[in-house]
Length: 392
Image (cartoon, rainbow, N blue to C red):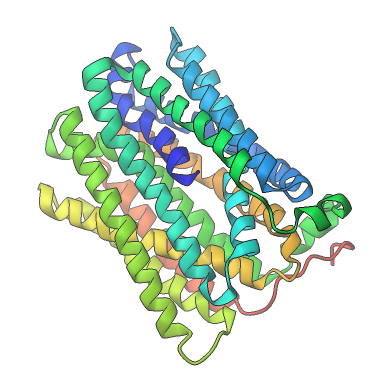
């Protein structure tokens, strides 16, 4: 599911240079187009995950992937940029509960001591999807055009939705689903009284910002810096994503072994989060390099650390939430907040490139934010996260 989700997102980033020429888009307009799926995505993160907790991951998983894959098919049929923006909004509607489904599955199936590693492996699907979507998209665009790219990826998603419905079963759905009630507003409000939740949220916001920036702008950044064509850009972008995916699994596994070698104490996972965020902050070194090898190394290392930090931070959330049946909704709350910031990344970067002629300030801002988030994680994340119906 993660691979398909991010493959579909990468389809736009690699198609954007071609689309930009076809629809005569400026860098600022490209930024708005890149962020368009996030408009509905972040608005529906919370409502969709509340429904997820009520009806289970089987139904929501199939409906979500089926809907956004249908949006991909429509995206390949549009005749103007306005129609395309509407398909991206529909894609955001479908993708809204994705991470809630993932967190729910991990909470249900993974052993507590292995949740960090399991979540990191799951999240590598993001990078594998970006790699596969980028390189496949580059060749499909070269051979058949960007519209065929969108339609082919949409068909893959529809096939997955059918298989998920036939194969997946939630281990608790027979005994729990009928008794579940939606989470109340006071319960959601009480989350923001928890210092641990605020620390986890700060990390989620900063890593999401960098994630969406790279996802939206990396191909254009490589074209800008290295002056290579679409196929070359797709290949090198995919290489970064693949190295990052495998690197993240190794980093996460090693750190989890070191931190928990004397026993399981979930709040210690914040040290993994902070260390990995510090590694991700190496993205701030990019303005100092202008040749292929060092740029690809910095991007790969930063992304590997970012995925490992995301996996550890998500596992930290699942560990500290006392009521595991509400993990979908709580994940939705974190995504709603973090995606409200993340949707600014493509837009703000478009303005930075338009007015300064380079990406330098964008990388510096991300590095500073990641360091601050690492400090907040260490200082704030210590105690269990409780949801109180009275909001207290």
